[in-house]
Length: 219
Image 1 (cartoon, one colour):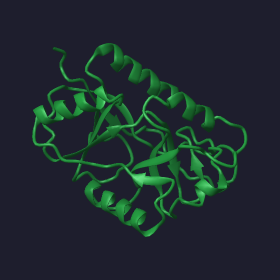
Image 2 (image 1 turned 135 degrees about the vertical axis):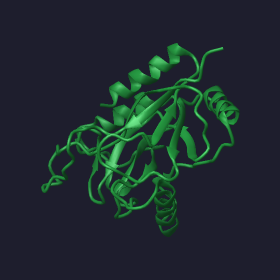
Image 3 (image 1 turned 180 degrees about the vertical axis):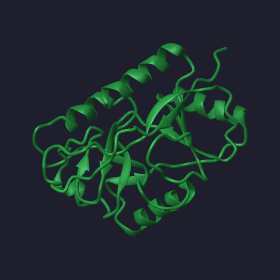
Image 4 (image 1 turned 180 degrees about the horizontal axis):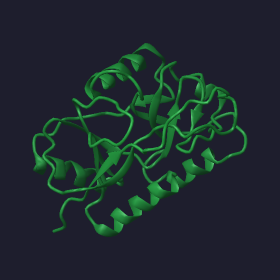
């Protein structure tokens, strides 16, 4: 039996600056959380747990949707019209195993009329004050105030112990998912490196490497 591999999501050390010319094709890369390995056997008490989505990372500043590198993503106008006027961080997702098709849409030179099957799975609001649980509540409130369309807060749950965490991971993987993300419920949003988020990758080392390669492709 393999030990449960866990990765720690951290923040890049490069400074974050929003471009004054937000309509340009590139801007400074937004400050987003990345993954690194952490010890196995994590007790999930005090953490909120969600599925790790195999999509394209996207940052919405309230006006422009950008990739992790700062490139403006070719989102359809009707898609952007469905986003709130608040900063969001999440994954553009078409379903499990659909990373390549989502990446192809994100690499288009021009915005199409529609992004069929694309959902913006949002897991945080960068820069918002308060602990993660409070920021999650803000996301849920914003979502409730608008139409249930192109975006949604990522569902979160609390798990009792390491055994429950392993069972949840095994279930997600068996259903074709990549793994789980754990975020400290009491963690504030902060610039710089953080140990407040962790994601559990697949149980087998081979699929763990596949997951890491997918993360590299999204840079």
